Length: 148
Image (tube, helix red, strand yellow):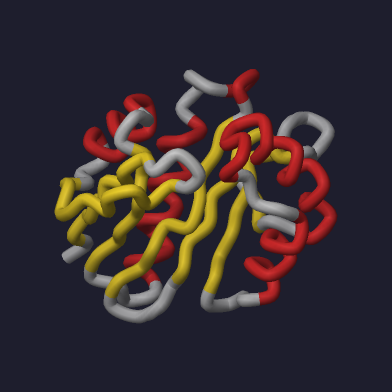
């Protein structure tokens, strides 16, 4: 599937998709606007469907030696098609292009599908953030992939 830069016109679809995927942890429209406003330090891409609406999305913070994955999501109707892996490879490439030596992220300890994706793509657990996800207090695993 093709990928393109995220646009402000994607925000309404992204808000709905984020709620579907992350429930109470979903980003609001204001958060998406703030993230897009931070370009070029923040970079976001989507995989669109046939009508050019986002099916999957990802974004990262290019803040120097260590880039940070901000978000990644795949519509339930498109899961299992390799879109998460495609977006993850794009983020690795972007981080390398920007000069990062490592890429990090937080993931819910209970999110087996995401953890498997990251582990298959060279990420290793470096720490745990206890009670990171609120409400509920679920732990976040901090994963890192060295890029050089």
